[in-house]
Image (cartoon, rainbow, N blue to C red; front, top):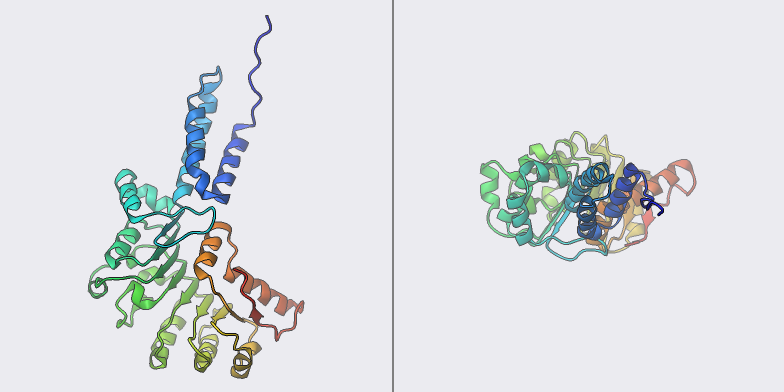
Length: 310
C-alpha cells in the first residue's frame, strides 16, 4: 500500500507574502483571507504545527491591513471597504489601543460630528494621512482651549478646511503639534482674501512642508499662489486645483514660469484620495511626474496644466 504523499506547498514565507499582497491590493478581501488562514491553522497534517504557526503569523500580519485605511462617511472606490461609526466603536472595544495605533495609517472622515472626529483621531495615534470634509457640531471652540486629538497623530499628509479640524476663528491651526511633520497639505482656504496674509505666514512656517495644494476659488487669488511659491522655501510641488481651466489667467499671474507649479482640475478628489491610499497613485504623484518631465526637458517648461484623470 503506497504511502500518501503530502500536498505540495509553497514555502511558508512566500505564502505569507502572497496573503499580504492580496490584502493590500484589495482590502475588501481581507475578511475572507482571515477566514482561510484560520481554517488552515487548524489543519491536522503531520507537519501542521510548523505550518500552522506560520499561517498564524500570516494572520497577524494580514489582519492589521484591514484597518490601514479607515473611511467613515461617504462612498468608497471598488476594492476599498467602508467603516461605519458604529463598527468603529465596536472595534475600539475589542482591539487594544496599541493595535489601532499601529494598524491605522490613513483616515477619511466626512460629514461627521466633531466629537466623533476627536474620538477617531484619539483612538488612532498612528494616523499619517488625514482627509476631513464637512465636519459638523460645536466642539471646535472647546478644542481650541483644551487638548485636542490633533495634538496626537504624527500627520504627514492632510486634506482639510481649517474650520473642519479646529475653530475657524483661530489662527494657530498649523502651529499644533500634529502639523509639525506635515509634508503634503491640501488646504481648502477661506473665501476671504483678507485672511491670506495670516494663512500664508502659517503655511510658510511649517518646517517640513514640501507639497502644497490650494483651491483658490477664483482667478483673483492666483497672486496668493505666487506668494506661497516665494514664501515656502522648501516647497517642491504647488498644485493649483481649479474648477475652471483658467490657463491664460494663470500664465499672466506667472504660475507657468515656476517649474514647481502644476495646475489641474480635480472633480473627484474623494476617489483620488482613496486611490492614493490604496495604490500610492494620486494627483500628487501625477504632479510630480509632470514636474520631472519639465525639469528634464521631456516636455516644454511652459506645460503646467494637467487634465483630470480620476
